[in-house]
Length: 210
Image (cartoon, rainbow, N blue to C red; front, side, top):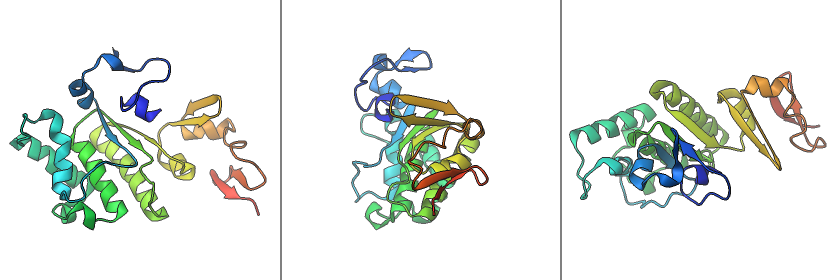
């Protein structure tokens, strides 16, 4: 769904509109000015430095040889500051941990300066600390930058604590609401087989049945 929303792959059915304009009628340039995307598997060269990787986010605005203006460099530095990776900005991407690389990719999306940022499973390959760190960072960035941030995740317990709205996708069923509404409407009680996982309304989280 996220790939279709961002124009990465063809829409199977229906139509997507961005600010009233059909997605299929937007040029690649127009789309790049509206949506930045962070995919699970990024086709990037690990020989790039972190600064160079983030600079790729300015590609929609640079000239044909990719010359960075002072405005572009300003956006890059601001993204680096927002994600708090000044200390690693000159490291090569192959030197980074999974968590550091994910932060660099988020910074690249911020440098692109789009009103909407879409991320596909941003916590994949991360331990529980860095899962929480990345999702809390996205929450903070949405408040600081006033951008809309949409991401897919299987980390429902973290999403319940940090997301403003949740789109819960099940087979033949989609439910949308803020976490408190979904909890109040008992949406999560039958999400998983009850022989192993139960939703605890006291803690508003899933628990292993013992």
